[in-house]
Image 1 (cartoon, one colour):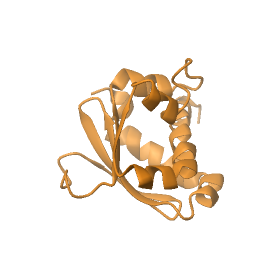
Image 2 (cartoon, one colour; image 1 turned 60 degrees about the vertical axis):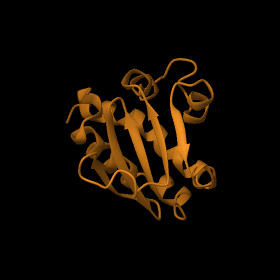
Image 3 (spheres, one colour; image 1 turned 180 degrees about the vertical axis):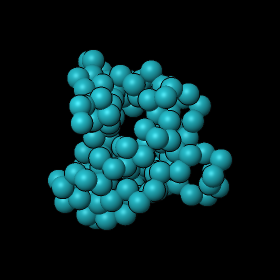
Image 4 (spheres, rainbow, N blue to C red; image 1 turned 90 degrees about the vertical axis):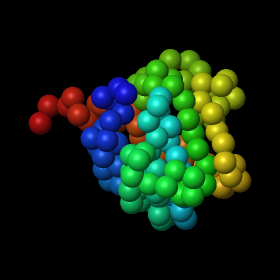
Length: 136
């Protein structure tokens, strides 16, 4: 798997999401457990009241019982989406599902009920690598 989406990257991502004031406001009623599949690696993401409380790598959780919906796609699709300025057709998670770049499965009602907070949260992926390469 790409180092870009390893557990350390996910931990930086969690920190960025939790430090984002607007996300805490937009996501204050967002309580979801979803599977984020990037290539052959899965992560269980738990969001409670506008905070990502955990991101757990596959193998450390019961794969079948713990998530409400899943977003899965190849590493290159997620890498393009996470660029500071993504290329056309990689700018939005929903658009990526429509164009079969990533697959959405599970309890779709939960996804759509929390769409505003989730889209905000996913867009924060674009800050992870920028923050890691910024001078101290």
